[in-house]
Length: 323
Image (cartoon, rainbow, N blue to C red; front, side):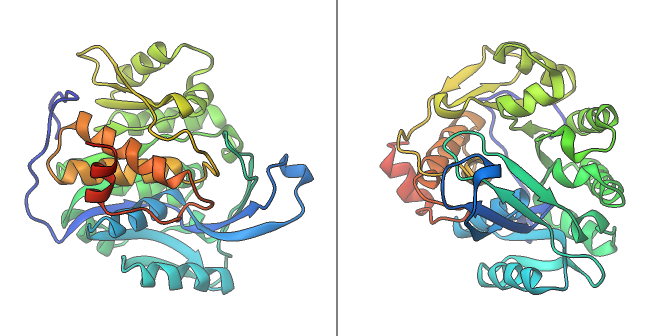
């Protein structure tokens, strides 16, 4: 996976026990029932959350074999999350249970745009490196992680060790660089760590908000150049309702329009994109085709509330949008 990639490339993976192993947060999203500023919200509904876990559940529903590396508390919310993970049949050999710290919770306002959120951290920050983590990565085709848990040690150290191992094992590395300064005690140091991960990533999918918080104000095309200069091979820049910009630094960036105009809730839209996109990659489609599948998968997601609203099968998605 280490060579130059273009948007027209596809991959041939060796047969592994798992299609994908993801390392990151699993948490409770408390989403407001009304689309109001967070400080005006009174009523919230409980939902399963955490980007890596959402990606895996959606991929499991799309008939991939998945494994999760995460840490939750030994508490009622932790049990709520575990029950869902077991029901969805993810491999949980690397789900760590923290007896001293609570399961993380995020308050989110219902929104058709980028939502407001407030995070209460806990067990997730104490993720420990163990041999089982290396074993799962060795037996997977894709390694996926995000930025949320990189903000706190010892989880940061654990994820960087897992990432370096995946890089050494020549796994396809997918990274969601959702950097937010408020999660970091030292935001400038945080930016350096994110860029360190970008240098080892094969595929990243930042939003315009992600790019702004990492690089400051710039045009979408300049953001693409900055991510490529940091070392990312394939950049999928999310433009919200305008779709995505797909770039490989060699060819002219390609804009792929969003499929759905009906928006109920954008929570988890990026995760469902990742699920559709990576499923397409694992099925042997080109990066360009897989990105179209990702857009189509996200289009189904945003028509319902919550990160785990139902999505059809891959065949149904492709047929519905004539892909």
